[in-house]
Length: 124
Image 1 (tube, rainbow, N blue to C red):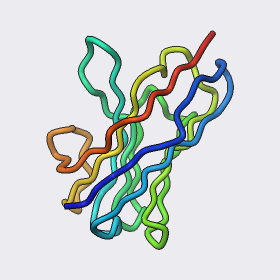
Image 2 (image 1 turned 90 degrees about the horizontal axis):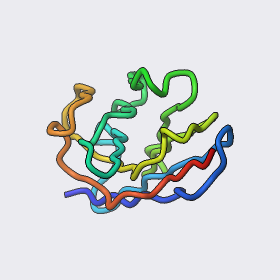
Image 3 (image 1 turned 120 degrees about the horizontal axis):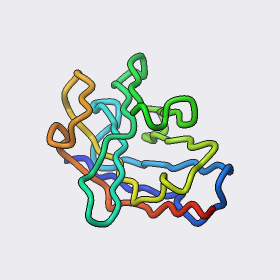
Image 4 (image 1 turned 60 degrees about the vertical axis):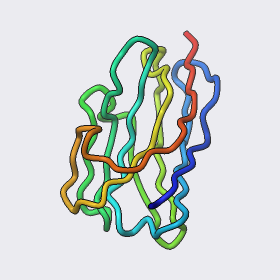
């Protein structure tokens, strides 16, 4: 089972940027589709972005298109979520997740392994 650790969260002002990292261990990240999800208190976890094994397929939620990008470097066993032009509504705990399927899914139930999450807080 792959293990995932997120980092890079923090408290920032609206309009600024953050880059979240997701480092895999235990198994090579190259074997997994990687997804990013976020959750706020009292709400369900929502899809943010996903990237296929080789990086050729990338999906973004409509709410972050044009502001966020997802990338990966399998040689570094790491995936990233670059978040630009942050808004207060982006405030959430962000999780990375791994799915052994070659299909890029946007549903959390498709993902088998999850990190512990990293808090992102955007002040207005």
